[in-house]
Length: 352
Image 1 (cartoon, rainbow, N blue to C red):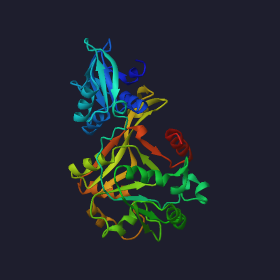
Image 2 (cartoon, rainbow, N blue to C red):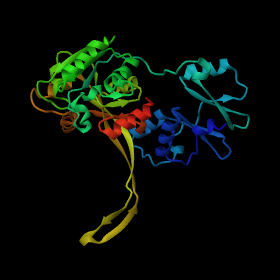
Image 3 (cartoon, rainbow, N blue to C red):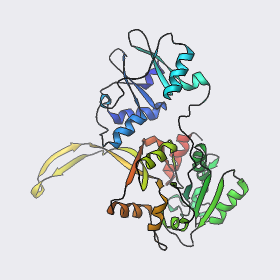
């Protein structure tokens, strides 16, 4: 019972607290319970994502967002009943209730099928990884090794990124190179990867989007673009589906970030008169992670020369009222190694 209570949440807790609990439990679902642990709803990361996309606040109670008619199993269920319900509805974890509707346990996919739950479909979208930067924030290590080859445990970050895409069926990868390009190429030459790998060479630094212009004749379908210092633990097939079904020209993946300002914040009126002090205000933001999906036609809008960042392209499209979407993920779904402290945190969180 102690284990199942880790995914219990009360209906008056806010969505931000639920997000943190989902991250910590790694179950992707919370069971919403009443005063005596009666089942009153469930809440998944997908429920929260849809709420955020509607512009919903993370400070509202869980009861506003939860599924009020959740699937569940009755005490005394058979394995066949559980399997049928899970497979039919693609559910990874089901609460089990007694005659009084009290949650007494939960059954997980892995316990029934002895294999990992894979809800996602496979995709075959090209992936471009921007690996040409100098990684100055990680100096002096990047004076010797290019940032994409810095180890996170026993693997360089770039192979962790690629392996995540391979898990979803992606097979075509393009690396945009400049700084220490020959070292990166030599590494993959010795690796003999099973996926298809090509290189784009920047004669001069082109920023986070400039080199994409050289791929106008190569990329003909929706494609991913990733920075080489981030890892996103999310359903890439669902991100692609989100991008295409909404008709976006560009979709960026945004991570929910909860900030607490550890001071009393002063609001000033006319002539320097203090209106109020707000103690330790909290704010929820969606932060750009550095993972994107682009349509091939956007490549014509990237200049042939000079430094050009993907945020420049996004700003241009917003001015033109082109569709730019945001796919939200939780804070712990985004692993960043752009700075030394962040690299250490990534190693710790991956357990490598």
